[in-house]
Length: 423
Image (cartoon, rainbow, N blue to C red; front, top):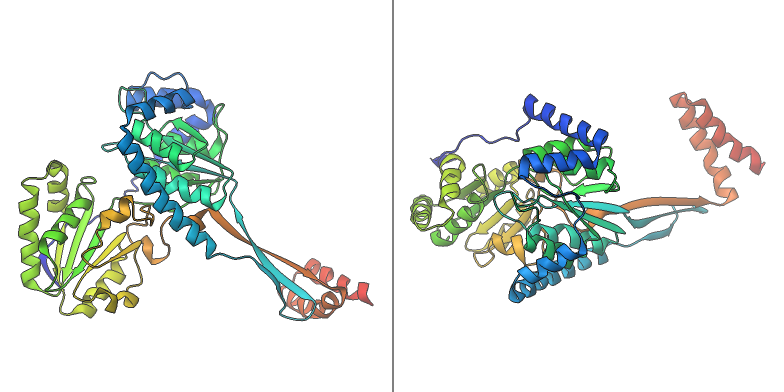
């Protein structure tokens, strides 16, 4: 693999100072509840709110502030996301009456988690689409209580109106104007105003990610996500304008976002680099995208398509695009990715907003062992079993012997009891 453009190494920050700072925030929220949340809101966001719960009046004001055509667009995107989540849920089925031996009946039920917190970032951009991507599959799964947390805009005391509208369209039951590690702590342990939840999902900055790590166990989480990334596989047929646009769409997220182009054509590699520079010259978000591309953008020349595929599988990117002559030919060889985009008509940004798949995806190699948020994130597969008296007595000797070999006398006795009861 030849480097045409190299990049700095990027890893998920886990510095001791971050760990200590987040622990202090969590401890303070656990000890002081709403008081701590309001103090942090004032400190970090210049907020003068006196309560963290967003009111129905605030949601109504948000609808009034968002143009009707934008509300309609949010609802259309929501319909696509909901339809795909429902299709995914339909792929699940309960299992009843499986018999490994006569009289032993095994099964499982598909049970939604009871309560979920959707964390929707504020920061540089109000990522209101994330409210749809988190809230909708949670509601489709059947979670009874879905809450959402998002920070207020600095100095405004208000959550972004687009974010509030998206949360409402998604069917969120409760909204809280709180962000950062303190929001994760509140949702995990509860405060006077916010009852704790069973699961927290959603992306965030390093403080949010570290808080999810520290609170995991008290609550379930989706995964630990780092900065956004895209990897594009191309050949001599790849359109450099398209590839460059998709690389920059990731690069503009923040200064540590990453765009990678792996191609079998040196001519294509050089054309994409030139096109990135051309598009940066007119891009309104070039102050972020240019630095991200300069520091973390990468262009690699593979000897052949097999080498490109191996690199992609080893890297396990959040977003994987295939811009080759016949993308379907290599689809089955691609195994590690958060979401896959086949062909040059299929822009990664379509998945970010409105095609229907989820955009909350694993980063920094986590796609080696997990996919992204989906309706199944909020569903538990819980087994059950029942046995006839005859089957219980017949199985007891096997279990008794196995328990005896492990030295677990009470286990052995519980099995033997079933055999004696039958006798």
